Image (tube, rainbow, N blue to C red):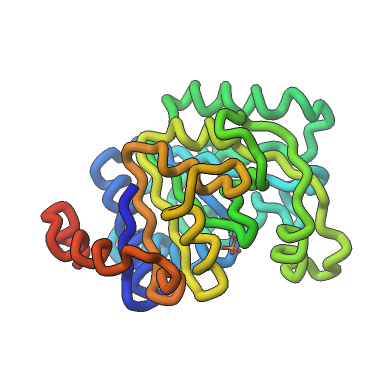
Length: 261
Ligand code: F6R
């Protein structure tokens, strides 16, 4: 795992978008794993801008989102399908047939996970997975104690996640208590992972995930197993990391990051 500390939130967001854009330029038919949430909004706005102003071409790209609320229809303004259309897909030239999210309306709850995994396999697996982190340490909706070997499945959200996300619902009490999520094991199969974490509110959980012990109680700590995971953070989110100076040194001195400095 590598940690990259950018001085501002905007720089962290821009760098994340630039890494996704480079992945698309390098492999026009790449498979991207996508996340929703507040952290990603500026990343998608920047990708839409790169499409509009620089012609970044998404026509061959395929996307798989991490999660979807159970019981919400695609046209429900609180669904993650709706979020993705509004924040990204409606602003780029992506083929709708190549954009996947779990089907929140699938009544066969136990069938949705294996079906989603089959679709990921059919598209060749995920080249680059974008992640955020929840205040309880979740990635996707893999809540504390999710097995590091877990696969795509239905889960019950923690009260902490409900407190984190329900303010985004017009009526907070309407937030579903359950969701489909890619598993931790599924996420770890992505060839490359980029996690974006911003804001002081995430500093403690970030330190636990990155520098703490591997523990299912902090699902994001599973990223320590991944051979090609980069965590991009702003100074506020980095404030509780013990090895900050080393991470800054690494970024300044590693030729791989030259184009991003
Ligand atoms: C959303 C997702 C979640 C979020 C996390 C952070 O698809 O997978 O893990 O990335 O809850 O959410 P924000 O960015 O709203 O703080």
